[in-house]
Length: 158
Image 1 (spheres, rainbow, N blue to C red):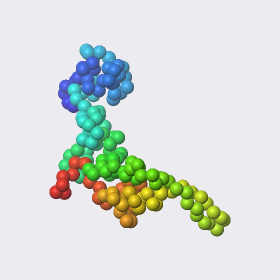
Image 2: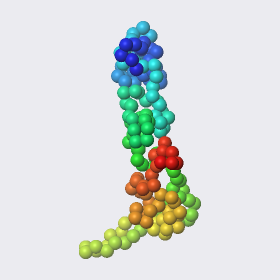
Image 3: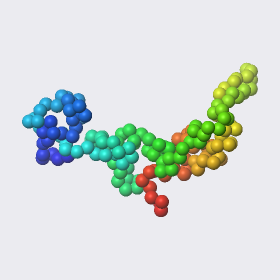
Image 4: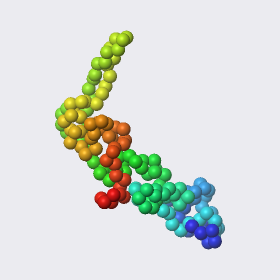
């Protein structure tokens, strides 16, 4: 984006996909003759999702070099969604007949409470095989944090 070059409104990359409005301002696209100091000929591509986004929405992660990240992906950096391992959750996907949830009765001073919990037998059978399982945290996906987390652009040497 240049301060010195004004892009014609009708040729700007900020036009909505239908070509009727500006994605930055929401204003109608004026014409191919009108120019705008906010215009640009390109949109950035997110290093995580690959989607295009407006340069002013640019977020840069500098922990492992420079990476351009859109706002949506920035909200999930550090979670399983952008982990290099991206392991399929066997608890959720394995066709084993053990139910995913079971009822548990808890004794309190006022009486009994019955609540639904993740099936400990299914966890024992399937989750312990997972690379993201830890004895302390059990299923790292449940808390969306894992001590083995690697952001997708980390190299093996890191």
